[in-house]
Image (cartoon, rainbow, N blue to C red; front, side):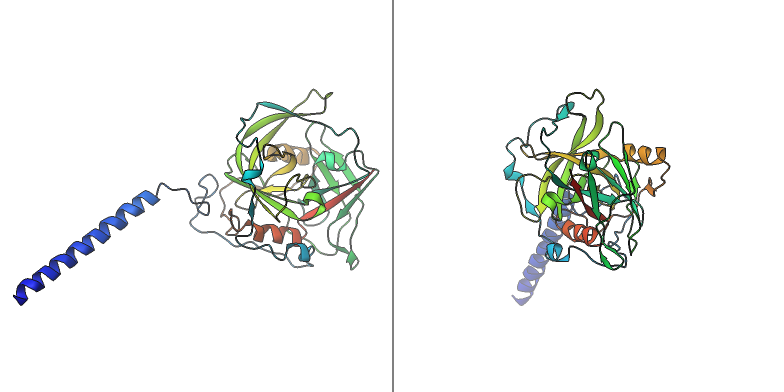
Length: 321
């Protein structure tokens, strides 16, 4: 009798172990087909590890505005765009404002360690006075006038040169190919305060600005997913700021947005690279696959955006007319 019970116990134990193994093998096979936002983007990296963001020495700015940006703090905005699922047209037009405000705010991107910036042309166009706020100069908060502004003849891109500040910063590396990204992270100063947006690349468009211009600019189109901090409506002021990929490389400049559709338009990295080279500026580029950054995913990107703002790599620009 005892021997029979022992055999039954061993049999049931064996069946339980087999069932457990079969279930786990099946689940792991199913999970191979799932998309994980925090996994590697094979278009960008076949390297089996990720790296943490690197921060330079120097003063931290906008600390009070960004200190609460952390993991899992982005706010989804998917329900706020009535035209979110509208198809992407091949051509589009950005309307010019008839009456521009006397003072407007935009963003600029560091493409050298000290004194060279990229922004959107419309951020600094027709300004009587342009002010850049890149950190400290002579120990005080800097509000610097550009020494030179160069405008692209067609694209919404401008190069700004300034005197040097007290501390260097990490310049963005520019990716040579920008249309292989899956996720984009837009960093700048919406409404004049620090902010960031996560989006997904959904296509391309040819954009014309105003009614008179015959030329069009090839741009990337992104669908907005979330923001930090929590605000709704226009992201005006984000223009001129950085669009980066999961490796932290620059893949475009924020140019325009549709609040009805939740779309963001960005200038192409190839366009801005060609413009820089044409004007005699050489910047660091990225062509090969490199490791992605741990903090650059849909949940944790505020950590990276906070570092970019505080470390003076994306700065505020003020236009006075």
